Amino acid sequence: MPPLRLLRFSELDLAAWDACVAGARQAVPYAHSWWLQATASRWDALVQQEPETGRYLSVWPLPAKWRPGGRQVYQPPFTQQLGLISCNEDEPAIGPELTRLTQCYTRLYAQLNEANGVPEATGGFTLETRQTYHLDLSPAYETLRASYCPDYRRRLLRHEAAVAPLAVTELPDTEPLLALFQQTKGPAAGLRPRHYARLRRLLLELHSRRLLEARAVRQPETGALLAGALFVRYRSRLIYLFAAASDEGKKAAAPLLLLDAAIRRHAGTPGLVLDFEGGMLPAIARFFANFGAAPVPYAALSFTSQRPWYLQWMP
Image (cartoon, rainbow, N blue to C red; front, top):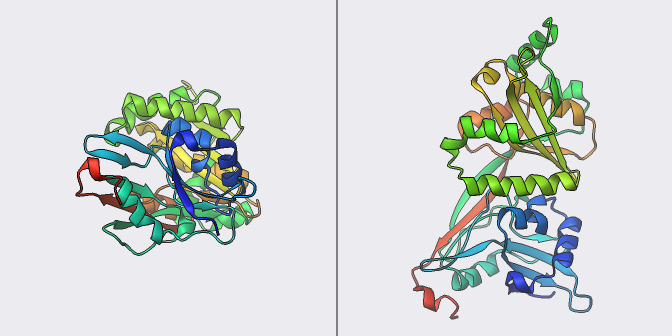
């Protein structure tokens, strides 16, 4: 089996890279070159390459930047999971590669994908078990709705019985949703203008590839945006990428309507999973679990070197 090699961005064959990610057993859209270029611009990588053909068999993206003290690996915004991605049945083990990374970087923080499992902490790494929530969308909508918590089912029944129920519609322009997020969650989320610029680049890429589903709930009389959500439809995943709601929208249960509409839209699709892309905060975890979703663990690895920066590339 060919070894993994550590490559800089300038050494990567992006066509071979995307072919590997697209054919990988793990459905990880965040690892595509166009996603990483939008959110991180450049990255290092561990790459397993077939010598005869040059085909990439496995890749591990390592978004990196120089900081005082040396080169650091970080998790880009709007990128839930990376880790080792492989289109080869006999994929490399992660554990043996960790020591090499401590020799090349002064600091590392990396969120693996759930298919990597949760490895044992080793070589000075700190291990954190994170979780997202998944909902299998294979069953019919009526079956999925029956698994909602009783309160959600009651709210939906009241909404459907209303004289003028709120409607979930397409959102052709995502800028109002970004503005709503900035007004509500933005300050607490710590997002800066550069983060919104990266998100806009990512949305353009998703839209050009027809992977983006944007939906909104508006106030009927004024047309004001009550809530909106962005979903990414990629292979076996429907990813709840981004959402925001006004106080009025929350009172009207607009976030519930948006997710219920997405579930209704894709219910009965064999093999499709709704990834809620979150669940570390208890209140958010309860919100997702109330749709019948189950927690799915994945690992985050972190490391901080005590060696001076000018010794980092020495064995």
